[in-house]
Length: 107
Image (cartoon, rainbow, N blue to C red; front, side, top):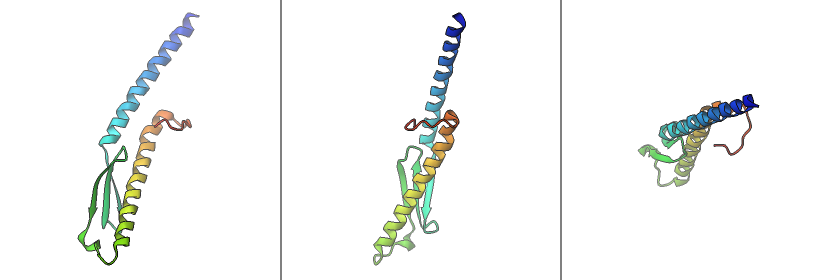
């Protein structure tokens, strides 16, 4: 029975290390800046790895008081592009911990 306890302790240590590594990876994601754009770069949105929008940049030549809807669409598209890239980066970064396991809601 001694071997069973040793294996359990070893597994617990591995789980604790993985938890620390995952926490570190999540902290690093928060520091990353991911850019989304629309309209050929006329509108750019910068988000961090926690899906917080940090910046919205709009080039002056895209601002047309006669066509506010187009500007709104460009901001929306750039924001969605940035958030999609954050999801991809998160899946790539955190996926190495799950190694193909389907664990919904883990991160």
